Length: 290
Ligand SMILES: *[C@@H]1O[C@H](CO)[C@@H](O)[C@H](O)[C@H]1NC(C)=O
Ligand SMILES: *[C@@H]1O[C@H](CO)[C@@H](O)[C@H](O)[C@H]1NC(C)=O
Ligand SMILES: *[C@@H]1O[C@H](CO)[C@@H](O)[C@H](O)[C@H]1NC(C)=O
Image (tube, rainbow, N blue to C red; front, side, top):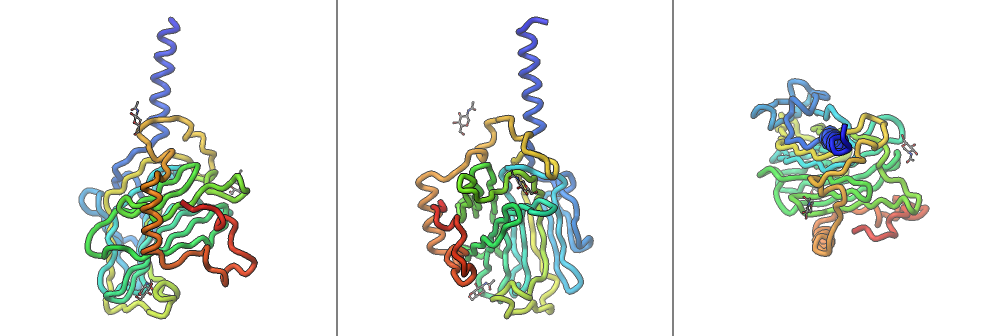
């Protein structure tokens, strides 16, 4: 074989390898997800593009991705239950399994009619959590679908709402702080009752006369590297240009937008919660978080 042919074949096999490693999915429920719990409380509509979860006294519902991922960009459009949704929690999160787990959370805490939803975010790195930031939203999340995004690369995690960054969690391994990067995570979406803590600290209970509650998810978009649970991130070593998320950070405009949104809409930041950390705030709090 001529060296020309060999390099051509090498090139083709490289392309095939990258295609296998990169999953770019315009999510289809049947293809990408399994039901986790709730069976008849989960409805799959529009040929797998729309999923509704319902919650009553008997059960909520949830689903999870078939695959685990190591790094990626995960977009989903969600619509929260309207009216008196106090006590309900609608989630979209990534999590590894097993001990010392990693997790990236978006949880939408319902409220009494007319009171704002709270978007609760958290990160667990090798089992260490307690890194909560909470936000009110600048729109009513029950009226329309809005896009919620997690960008997770080796340098940082970015939470976005309708494309605007609300939180950045940086990789500070250089300071020996753990960062999620050696465990693959699955995508989860759940809808459940958490009236022991969710709304105004558990003071407002779920009013079951409004049940069943309903939350909707559509247009999952997964641009990520596949990884089996617990395996190293070798499948991410291929590079492709279709994945701006791999190096995504914030430019000056993005940093300004983040600061402005945090100033206006952040309602809780663990980094200012001194009573919670009597021995001193977590070390990452001292470092720039944009
Ligand atoms: C990888 O993850 C495990 C948790 O399963 C953790 O205990 C370990 O310290 C991590 N290793 C590195 C090199 O980050
Ligand atoms: C519910 O509304 C109250 C009053 O406006 C607000 O303080 C709270 O953050 C809202 N969200 C939750 C989950 O309690
Ligand atoms: C790769 O992506 C960058 C940024 O999106 C773009 O400017 C560049 O032209 C792309 N390169 C190729 C070879 O497509």
